[in-house]
Structure formats: C-alpha cells, structure tokens
Length: 107
Image (cartoon, rainbow, N blue to C red; front, side, top):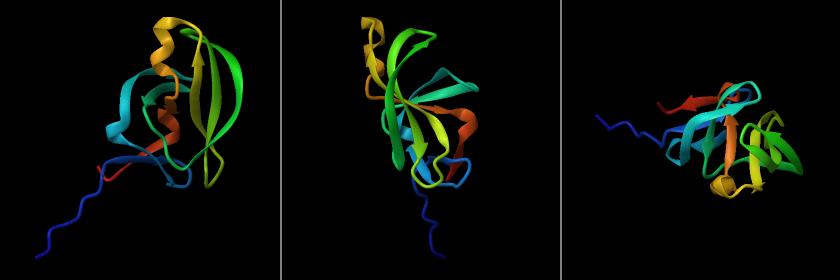
C-alpha cells in the first residue's frame, strides 16, 4: 500500500482555487481587512499587484496596492508597499489576505 503524498498546507482563491499563499508564510492572524478578519503573510503567489495608493488604515497611513488572483482577478487583499510610522515598517513588502477570500487546501 503506497503512502499518500501530502503537499504543503496552503491557501487558495475562494473563487477559482488558484493557490495564493503557503500556511508556513503566515506572520499574523490578528489583522482586520475590509470585510472582517485578515491574515498577514510574508509571501504570496499567483497574484497580480495593482497600482499603489496611500490609504489611512487602522494603524495609520500606508502606501498599499490591492492584490488580485492571477486567474479570476478577484481582489484578495493588499500588499503593504510603505509604512510611514516606524512601528509599522515590519509590514513593508508583506501581504494581507482577507479570510473570507481564501480557502484552505491540503488540511
């Protein structure tokens, strides 16, 4: 009997199941998105980064860019391009995925 191959636990677009992030890349689950809870990831895959814009978020002013699924173009969250406050610099280059926009795979 062959052992079952188990891939890495990952997250996919809730709409089309395109793989967008690895569970191992989660930095925090304590974020707030536009539509509820959101997760902060160190990396993302199969996403398109939109134009940068300055947004006032709960933690102050940030330059962010929406991220879209590369397959179905669903908006999944945003990428932090720049933080204006020193305490928020750790977010630069990181990705927010809205919990409601991603689904678990291989769990």
